[in-house]
Each structure stands twice: as C-alpha cells, then as structure tokens.
Length: 489
Image 1 (spheres, rainbow, N blue to C red):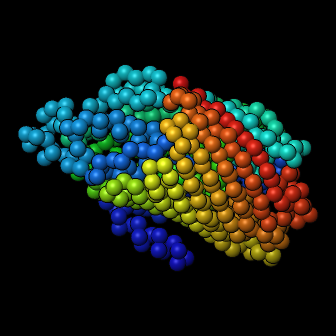
Image 2: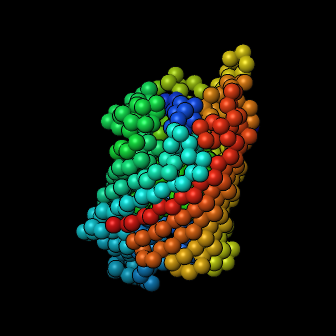
Image 3: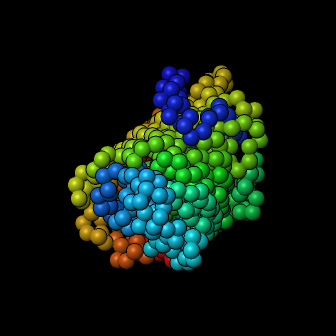
C-alpha cells in the first residue's frame, strides 16, 4: 500500500497538466502463464546499438522510446535554422509565427525506414525470422517459459510487420493530426493479442484458432493488430501530442517491435511483468526542453474492450541531462483489472539509460507490480500478489556495423502468479528467475540486422511433483542459442 501511495503522490501533480486521472479499471487480464499452456509458452524488445550523436543541448526530450519516432524527430530538426530549445512563435527571426521554412519544420518528413512516402503519409515494414537451438530438445518443442522465440529447434517467422500512417505535423504554431495502424503476421501474434480484439473475453482465439498453443486451441502463426490510433498535435509551449486508440505500452525498456531491440529474446519482466498494449487515450506534454510528461486513461492491460466499464490510469515522466548522455523514464499503470472492477493492479517501471562513452552504453531497469487478491493462501483465502525485478544491459559499439551486448536479469514472482500461473500456496516452491544473455548485432546495411545470442536461464521455482520450470518442467536451468535476421523493407 505504501508503494502505491508513493507512486501516486509523485505522479499525480505532474500528470494533471496533461489530463485528469481517474481511478479506473479494466477487465482482469491474467497472462497466458506456463500453467495455462503446459506445453506452450507463457504470456506475451533494448534499443539500437548505434551510438547516437550528441543532441542539441536544449533539445526537448521525447517520452516515446521508439527508435522510429526518434528518427522522425531528427529528420524534422535537421535544418540548422530550427532550434528546439526556443521552439514557439517567439523563436522565429522576425517575431512572426512561422514566417519561413527555416523557422518551422516541414510536415513532409521522410525516414530511411519509409518504403512509401507521399507528403505526410508513409508506410514501413520488416520481416523478422529466426531459429532457437535448445540442446535439451524438449518433447513439447517449446522453450518454456521463454516467449516470442519460444519454439525449440524450429524455424520461426516471428514478425511480418506492416505500418501505415500519417505523421502529425508538429509545427509549433498550428494544430496537427495523424494516425497509424500496425499489422503483424507471424508467431509473435500470440504475445501481442488484446482481449476483445484477437481473443474473446475468455481468452480463446477469434480467428487464430487450432494449433499447438493453448492446449490445441491457438494457432502457431496468426494475425494481430498491435496498434491502431489517431494522433493530434496541440501547439502549446513545447508541444502536446494526444494519442487516441490502441497503442504499445510506455512501460519498460524492450519493445514489441523487433527492430527496436538489441536481443532476439526478451527479459522475464517484459514477458510477464508488464502490459504489452493499451486501448485508451495518452497525452504527451513537453513541459520543458528536457522534461516531458505523459498521462492518460486506458481500458486495462492488453485489452481492446472493457467489460467492467471502468478506466485505468497510465502516466509517466521523462528527463534527460543537458549533454544528452543521461535519460531517465518513470512510468506507472494502475487500475482494477477484474470483471467486477474490484482488484487493483499497479505496476511501475524505472529505466535509466547512460552513455558512458562514445562506445559504451549502460541501461538499468527496475519494475515492481502488485495486484490485490491476486493469489491465495493454503486456506484459499485471497491475498496480494507481487512481482519485481532488475534488468541491466551493457552495450559496446565496435563500429557503425557491429556491436556487442550483455543482459543480466533477476525477476521474482513472489506468489507465482505471473510465470507459473498457479498462485496458490503449496502449488510450487521458490520464486526467483535469472537469465544472462550475450549477443552480437551486425548491420551490413540499414536494411539488414543479424542478431545471434547465447542465453542461460535458471530458476529455483519447482512446481509440485515436477523437477523445475525448464525442459517440460524437468530441469532447473536451460541453455539456448538463437539467431534471427531482420530485413526492413
């Protein structure tokens, strides 16, 4: 209770600038746990390794962590006559509002990922395919509890991803509008689905049915729509962007979109401890050149529809240092996540990104989540369920084409409600998961990225009557070697 009070106290004052928060709820969305899948995966990516050039000292920070959106922003500010540090009508040389191209950015923005571009309309896409070798060769052919690259010793087309949209003109002196739709076909559909859209309220599939997942009720390959939203730019101070619709979470460091991540596999906290998508409204307000706020109302974790007719709150704050080497993002999500709108689920995520030198970059992430009545004691009386963990990443840029990365994680599922998925006292012993991943990225061109990695997982969680969480519940550890290739259209 104290933790939630601290989170709310620190964020409510700041986030009220963008929106008024409402304590709300959405439908209970328990992750597809190991117990639910048994022989399938659980529940449903870090940034590019290329060292970015130092930004302008007073360039506004961007709360969105997407590399795509960063590319779009940089393209808009290439003109040396445009200075984000003094954006606004008073920044123009004549004092008038946007008298020249050199004063205000053009809406005709192009990025290297666009394969179609006409005025503000664009299309992007990529193909991500890979293979994961598991020397244990589990009979189920699943690398449980890993998700995304969850198939053992088998080719996967993870993502055939298409983005179409219109970029909102962020002219600091006039209103802008845009929108975006994302479509994904591949094995990753299963971990990007939203209840009420790709699945029914009970979790069964709308159209991706019949296959080896979920006890034979879900296909191996399927179609999902991770994002569908309209976007509006309000020219207030340094700018306010309002997003309405279905969009990716702002929590955490890793992304659903393959090109946004260094590693092929994902951390436990991204897989089990955070939502993947929201449906609702989110406003991003540039409070100062290096400080941004976000706040919005949502329909709950990974939900398209809200059967309990209550809203949850999503908010965050982003800051970067004057020299651009330090970035801090804090985000929080809270709401009542069951059908009756009673059991609150709150999670926060803190991400620190530090550029150590021109070649070295470090990332630290801490998450904590709690859900009321999310577990049961030996007498089947409800009690809170908690999960938390720490991720650390270290990246080394060898050249513009090659880089190395290391990730170490500790994730604790205190009542076994997130990974194992049976939060009943005595159903399993232990609560800790660890993983160490070493990877290499090679980009021979901006269109291709090869991402081999070696990963070691171990856990002290032992389900009753089994030997561990790996190799179809027979081992306490797991080794995998995986590689994938991303081709950007």
